[in-house]
Image (tube, rainbow, N blue to C red; front, side, top):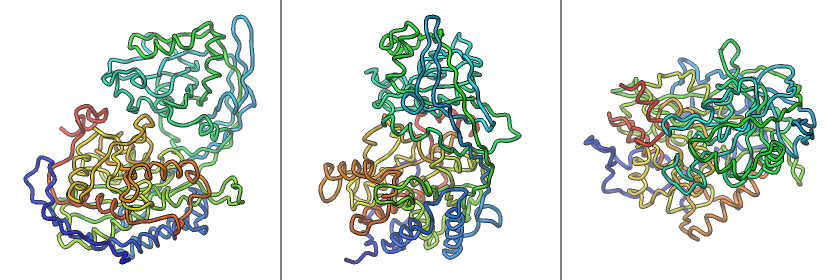
Length: 551
């Protein structure tokens, strides 16, 4: 089989994006994509010598050296002045929590068992956190969303108290697609938002009630945070709001707390789905403690640039996270290196392939293109968060973001999955590119999981930049949707965030992955040649942000 990508001649490649601008040559640059080169980059980045590409490790140094060397070899200029690196100051907070939490009511007291009943940590870089009979308040979903006429904190003072909140948002399971976004999670449903809002309200702590279905994953995923080190942005010298204690409680534990408070859990859950819900003081007090170790260090984003010919001050950003989980707990085979071949050596390798394709264009881009390999995605999207807060190029001049996190390793598919259906015009660009390649765009199969808020594109969306994020199609050319679903399920069960996520030539087929890279290249190429700007859809929660500064 000839593994150099075959280019199908396309008779027309005009995107229906409300512009009369001439379409770029659909074949220009595509011949540079090579399965062999893509494969070689994945094999390199996911090899044991990179030690799982963990920030603050020798594996980071090796990764940074490799990426800079490759950018130079391809022939693209540094993206941050005369450097390919952008410093990302981080802090590692390792929490050691007391083994139990005492709950006291007017009538009795009892203890909750750490790890089994709850998981607790701190985002504050302090030596110790102590909770001493701090009040618990049930704050519904813990959401303040004016555009939905929703405020769970209306009329309640939670300052220095611990709020207990539900996972997801009120639309989930309500049977009303107009309530928030129905079963499709909004950012208000993410646990990260709930911690942020609790801090803004002055709460001392925030405990999210776990439920497998609206959370989209089991409590075991949450338990991995018990007494573990976590990375955060180093925000010394800035006014920031962080709760002293954050974490999760299991649903059985939540029911126990509600019973001790004299509240019916099912009844309160039902009330919390209505916008006239009023937060409730549970008349319970919690006591426990945590000790921490704090370490400050520097990680790095890697940035390269192609300067546009006629609009060099307008930017399109391609992003992919270079990091993974490093060296950790050994599996049954004794392997302790979390290589992250699919997550995200594929995305990083794909970024390099797209860089190379842009350098081969006969018609050079009008707009500049920034290629950004970001750090610490696995630790909370930190590298992209730092870039969003400290952009090398202004957000007002940034046209769009195209993010790659996990590129299809299982063969050709008829579809490509769009994560975040209905968010921005970027999906229209993708749809036209897919149709012209004889493929189609499918909505994400599990919108409740909130994947639009779980990779680096989200930090660009948070500052108003239209962001595109795709997932692997499941409608396999050979085997159909049933085969694709089994492959996805097997990946989650067997390989996701495990040492087994390694490149395997007997199991992987990168033809479909290269097809997806070409689609993302075509989207960016179209954007780079035109003068119009993609916009957020009217129902997107990010539209007001962009509208606020793009006037």
